[in-house]
Length: 186
Image (cartoon, rainbow, N blue to C red):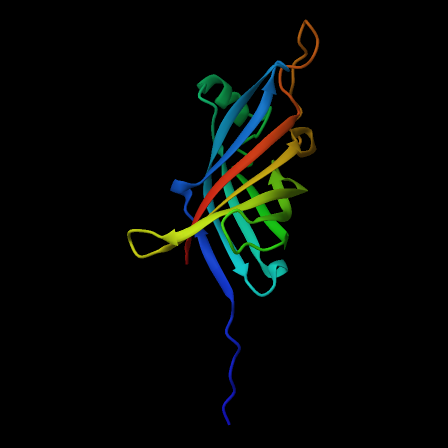
């Protein structure tokens, strides 16, 4: 008698760091947004097509890779006043659950997980969109997602600020986070 094992519908995708980006934006002097980018150091997406709750995402972001197009500001953001990248070189995101599924381009879903910055972990919710899937010129299969969230930087110990003479603060507390992620089937 032979037994059959049900075919798994789980797929693992390695995040392609050269085709992925994490962008953040914060208000400067309460009047304009300053944007910065981080490099994704490593990451994977595991998709269970039969049960979205068993799907998962893990991402490591290089804290010292922040680039706002101004060296002096980037160094300050890497310092203990903000990211303290020397002591906390990696920002991590690990999903707890995925709500909804993606089958077709444009499908929207939610990824809830733990974001850790400066050793402080908080739950965040990413509003995600499936951007598409296709074959690359080297025979690999790729998928793409985008996601957005907002966090209060003070929740992660990023409390440095400076009062402005005219009122208000130099750096806004609300951070808008946007991700564009491409991954290749492992």
